Image (cartoon, rainbow, N blue to C red; front, top):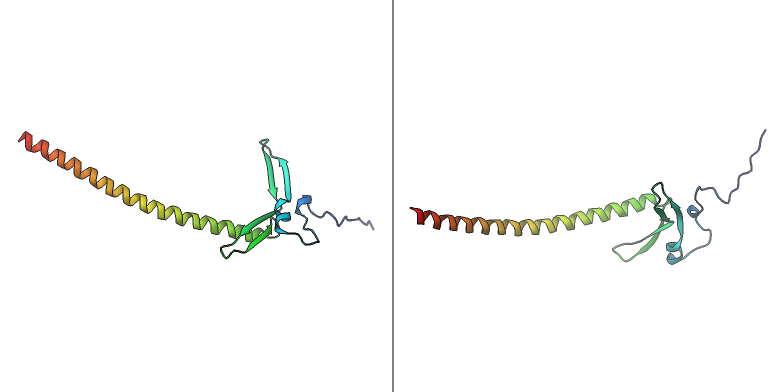
Length: 121
């Protein structure tokens, strides 16, 4: 029977994925980098170990990029949803202004055309 010794210290591919045993502050967690390597295009890729999220109620959490991936996805989804609402409400305002501007332009063209037609006949 072959027995394999497993190094329990690093059970992850990236050393930055390891969660420290001792408690850390949010600032210490925010400084940790899980991946710092070039990608196939030659650009440098940096992935933080923890993503610091500030919730609307004022609570700040450091979410681990592997362990808390679902929560990170939920936060990104919520931010995207709120961004779409802002863009949509802004587009409505712009659309209203464009419609008013278009209406004024059409009325001005109609007025000029009427004057020209009266002058011809």
